Length: 131
Length: 386
Image 1 (cartoon, rainbow over the protein chains, first blue to last red):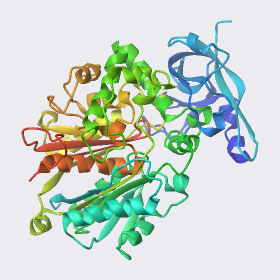
Image 2 (image 1 turned 90 degrees about the vertical axis):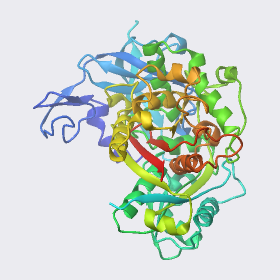
Image 3 (image 1 turned 135 degrees about the vertical axis):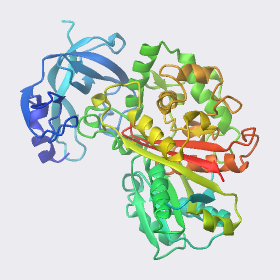
Image 4 (image 1 turned 135 degrees about the horizontal axis):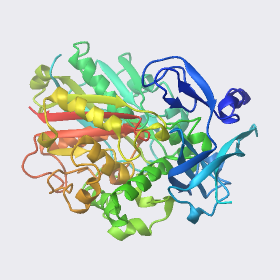
């Protein structure tokens, strides 16, 4: 991945910035330029809440090439208390202990090392809130 | 708008076609379509192909295929909507003819997927998902549908055996299709005994990696009459989209784009869902066929899995689903899949389906549903015997 691509996404990937429509209140992660619900183009930037709940998940056993060294790994969709949903890997867990309804929080982790350039990319993963 | 008919269909047996090139598989299907229609010239070519660039390093697919099917200098272009590329090419060809702009158009589809390794193919297919917010985190297509499957099974208390009924039924249908990649039946328990790909989906829940191509020829009903071929009219076309990321949808157990595309096609055709005699749907994964048949309106939400297990969607059922064998048995060369579906409906409406696969009672109205990604795009068509 070209470094600029990681660099320009820092606000959402590193600082977890989301956007709230100033007109209808719909929340978006990542932020976007126009509200898909009401057409408004003004947003308030805010930080996502800390806690989310797993809605569904899977265990990837046949990954794309850049994730071959990590398989098998859990990945799922979690919903924050403010209604925003996000997809991320579920780290630090026994694969057979992951459950729908499980509480997770976000932690800053290494996601992948990009092939020939060897550029490391970092972002968030879900971590179970059982400790 | 002018009335449009399909007058020619062309396909070749799908599979791991190591001895044949990207351009040659398309040319073979296209030449079969020209021969079937009895025409030697087309005015325009639209080729559905998801990613020739990633699979074989070849883009500019419209131009190369126009030349290699012997139609140098015609109008030609490449149409892309991920796994719905073929369905979209058919829709664009339909619009060209209906609008009066072009008289004879070929809608084709092609994908050459076995010239890369499995993880290379997984990478290429994953480009149909949200690259920055899904794929970046390591999800794959089996993974996305697995998340839908888990949500659906928990919500509606669906059993493993009910889910397995989809690949079981499709392999049974496909065992009667001489063009299928895997033309053999499987046992119900084979599905859950297969290797896990993305829990809860096992290998036989998933459609395969396939080399394949297909082509059909569309023209006006007036020209079709002169060609003296059975006239299969295109009476409805619907296209709809949804968020590309699965996690941004309101429901993980419903496909809104399929619902809307189906409603739009039915409205255009002036038909109700009960008027449909058979349907080819996008069973890229077992769970997809179930949610698609519900979203199209054949069954209520949560009833689709039971319908399959009870034989309602079998060849001799109330509404046969995927008589061709579906993507599961016939194969899923992504760009060609939507055209392959049209070919099966045309065969069934002509009464030409091979090896005892023909649906009894002379079906009159058939539907196709072709879907891109995890349902971010869906194309539905309705065809009727003239």
